[in-house]
Amino acid sequence: MQVTTYWLEQAWLDTHVEPGVAVDVEGDRIRAVRKGVDAPPPGATVLRGLTLPGLANAHSHAFHRALRGTVQVGSGTFWTWREVMYSVADRLTPETYHALARAVYAEMALAGITTVGEFHYLHHGPGGAAYADPNAMGEALIQAAADAGIRITLLDTAYVASGLLTESRGEPPNRHQLRFSDGTTEAWAERASALKDRDHARIGAAIHSVRAVPARQLGVVAEWAASRKAPLHVHLSEQTAENEACEAVHGRTPTQLLADHGVLGPRTTGVHNTHLTDEDIALLGGSSTGTCMCPTTERDLADGIGPAVSLQQAGSPLSLGSDSHAVIDILEEARAMELNERLRSHTRGHWTAAALLRAATADGHAALGWADAGIIEAGALADLTTIALDSVRTAGPLPRLAAETAVFAATSADVRHTVVGGRHVVRDGAHTSIPDVPGALAEAIAELHA
Image 1 (cartoon, rainbow, N blue to C red):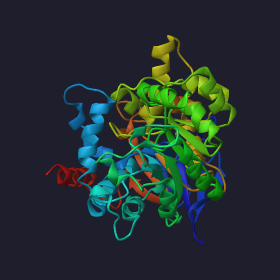
Image 2: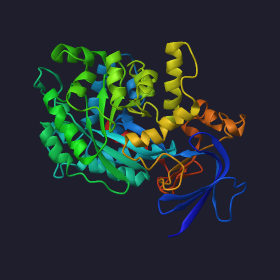
Image 3: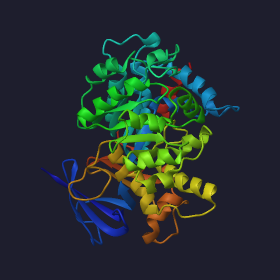
Image 4: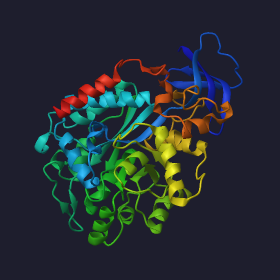
């Protein structure tokens, strides 16, 4: 098999920046990493700037990208935002969802994202009628990721109720949510079981939230994921109203309810984990349940600042997601997590740049079931992201401070190259197979607002 060599002007190797690194790629994996290579070897592809492992976007709702700008008009809350979201969801078909997701995932590639965790709950047609292929919407997302050149973990989501009602059942889905619901988690499991892994795609599970899956059905989803050793994600304590309803019906917090039903554990990730008690934090950390922070969405929706420092100290690994895609910029998510904590605590330096980059790379990939990605070492998947160090945002600092520069100054606009499985997906800031990503986004979104 042919070996391709990439020469990295500066490389982040998990703990430090290393100048002059040659990465030999065979197939889709790194064969060797050679340090101290002062000049590009003959025939090598040159990546100038700081090269990181590919970035992982651990929490995405692709169709929310169509809300950007629209939901910034006026004021409101998460719940008023949700009504606008429903209006977009109502209009999507497998064909229009593929077109939108293809453009959204191409935008992610331009931002240096090589793997996305798609929290997918838009399963059926209007009124809840199944498509001829019950997984037509999920397959559209898997194909969209392939077309955009990135990896995907499709987190097929159980969503069978509109809210908490009693200990044994929830309120029926509203007319918008009928598209999300399989009726029961048993029916969800039957449909989700037809989805299969492939080279660029892995299948995981998600519980939308404790308000959308009645307590007695939580175990079905947890057992489905456990039997496949698949990642399991859940929106957790994003809103205080969710906590209050759970306390009223079950006499415990959402975290405690999930623990009671076997949902927590090292393959599980709680998304947001915003409004937690000390006991919640101990349960999540003690079970090695992960935490996916989505700071740009959490601030956009006025959700609050989650206790990320306490969670990590308790044993909960951190990952990052762009969620509703108010912006798609994992560097901004990393920076915002630190800066949010500074605002809350009035102190600086809760995470090093290296720790934030690990959340954006290795730990994000692990949360999505790609433990063989997110690090530049022999045997790992050959996924690379190169950040320019000569833009107006990044020029000036010493090369040894390139990691700090990337996290605290760079944006997605500074991504110069994205390599996925040894293949150049973004070269010199341009997508190699989708030449007009802004045009593709505009066309796909216009179709939904027509």
